Amino acid sequence: MKLKLNVWRQSNNSDKGGFVSYNVEADEHMSFLEMMDVLNEKLISEKKDPVAFEHDCREGICGTCNMVINGRPHGPQKGTTVCQLHMRQFKDGDTIAIEPWRVDAFPIIKDLVVDRSSLDHIIQAGGYISVNTGQAPDGNAIPIDKEEASAAFDAATCIGCGACAAACPNGSAMLFTSAKVAHLGKLPQGKVEHKKRVQKMVAQMDKEGFGFCSNVGACEVECPKEISTENIAMLNRSYLGSMMSTND
Image: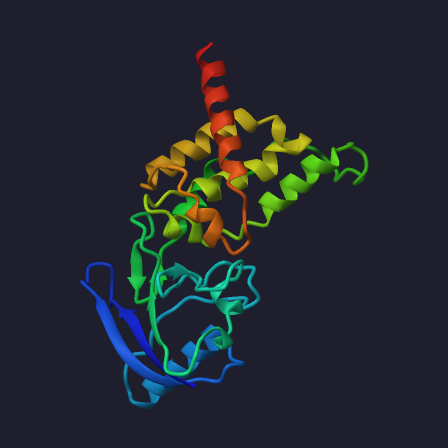
């Protein structure tokens, strides 16, 4: 299949950047990143600068392949990362626009590579359990309601890719932050520090420059792990409750 790619090229964060068009031939069985490899091999053979893009596992679990494809984070297929997106989702002769996350808190490093360390800072602020529990307890030692355990596991599937912020018109990281709060706060081990965790992580999120949540819902639609916005509602309740108890 023959494709026209409009790829965002930007040498560094201070460079203005812009779209550059390339023609490439790909097989429908290739993944999207394999198609990008074909483009880069072509550029290298022509002694041109290859397109910088991130990838690691290519198994849909690391969250590094941050690309907006034809206006959608991770592309047109629901519940899929770029590395798991295959070229059979496109047609011969298609024009594909490829650009990086467009979020103020994710400054562009080069081309399609952005700095997502702001998400790491949110985790460092409180996304952990610091209570000393000693030896690892038996898995069945603490009874946990099945519904709560399932909700915690669903939230824990967040891979921290940042697609939620990229999809949000406000550049909000509420879905990411709420998922990290929920997967700890719904379990007995994490409830001890829940109030402090919520306050610290929300404060850090604001400090990083993410926008506010206005319940558009695009984050849930574009999330490759389909994290529910119910976690955002839980985070809002927890934050309000923690602030009221602090003031008391």
